[in-house]
Image 1 (cartoon, rainbow, N blue to C red):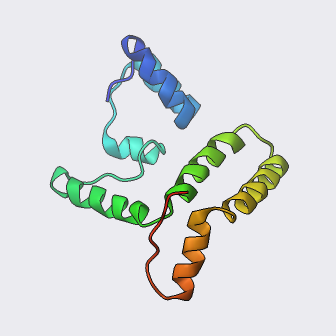
Image 2 (image 1 turned 90 degrees about the vertical axis):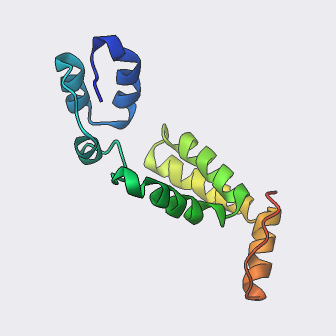
Image 3 (image 1 turned 120 degrees about the vertical axis):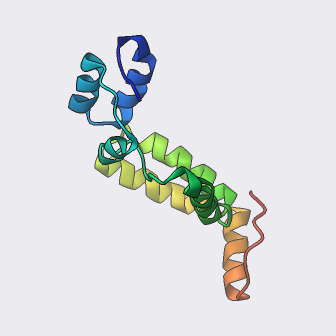
Length: 125
């Protein structure tokens, strides 16, 4: 990947997720960096050979799709919301969101499925 003045749109994104000093260096020097460097900087979760990419994506997707769609949706919303909160505010907010989530149809289905020792069939509500 090349990060330089002609790619400042990518620099804005990188600054929000990467180490600022490193992103500044990449932006000012225009030096390309490889996937392993990006992973070490926290920009990537995984680096796999291209022959293993589909298997890795399938593995990751399989870890998500069996979860409650409501919990996933509300969790993503909560992560965005707490990003700008203090620690104490984020704890209080998260606790309130867990209480709200417990009242959803997905939560009821999850408890019922657990009691019946079966996989849940998430309504997504």
